[in-house]
Image (cartoon, rainbow, N blue to C red; front, side, top):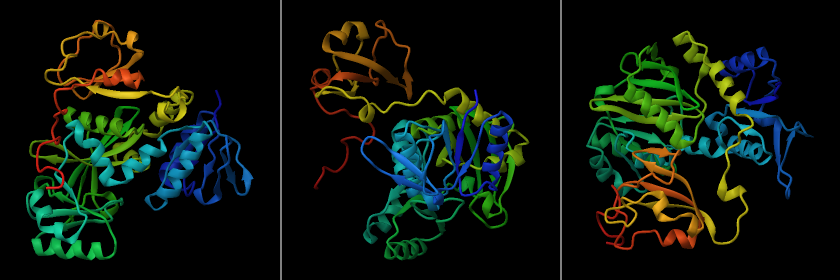
Length: 397
């Protein structure tokens, strides 16, 4: 079936855009390049519209976003508008925005035991000393919240250096992260390309000379990885899934105790990795698009009109919970006006559950239905105690 697939990109000459167009057109699809500067968003009631060079844009079947960091705000707004028009977007606006903001990304990833270097977000100058101590002392990595290709990433070798950098950035109104410096991976990391939840390629990037950043744009040398360590593959796959990215470039440091994730890129370079690996990486992306173009993800909160009092909620199965040891059938969810969306267990979603699935401590039951019935299933003996939960200094202390 012939598709019209718009590629949201600044230029048809960009390597990754060019490769995607080559594969799409070779399969008989139309693949116009839509430059953000030529598009205008028209918001009107019950009829979202995009204007292209002043004319109403005919709705394409799908859009592949290739948005640079300088265009994140307007670019994600364009992707959101395509979504409101019912167009399949390879990566969603929400997922792109989450991956572009380093703090929000690691916040989303942090509860899944995925392997992250300790990181502190600074809100004032007074935090500098304690922030550095929290991540293990100097040297430390200092990052701007948004940046790519190594821009906005600095190494502070001393406390004085860290203080000077942070004070300068704070004076300019920049929000920054302080992150543990993983010395054993200095100037080296692994970039993994994930498409549709599957690892399709991986390279090791090695900095040249005294450079500590391993980005190819900073002169690093990239080498293909033929047999990627399964732990690194799983980290990359989970990171893309958690952030909701169908296509992602996941950057992982080689820590002493295993993979440490540092960044997830929603518009990874396809052409660059193809040159290094000798693989065709544009085709798996087009394969995924062709398989899923008519399967648009559903945002229940936004798109499903339900009666007041209905919604989606998550119920923890904690120590001493009456749900522990019971099967889904024994709980009688249907009689309570509830349906099971999935059971979250050990970092994965159990989708193919039946009435005989027995719940165990640590599970999280995702339900849809009457919220008043959901409240009846919540534990009443105390808070849900998970890592980072209620331990520590009380609020306001």
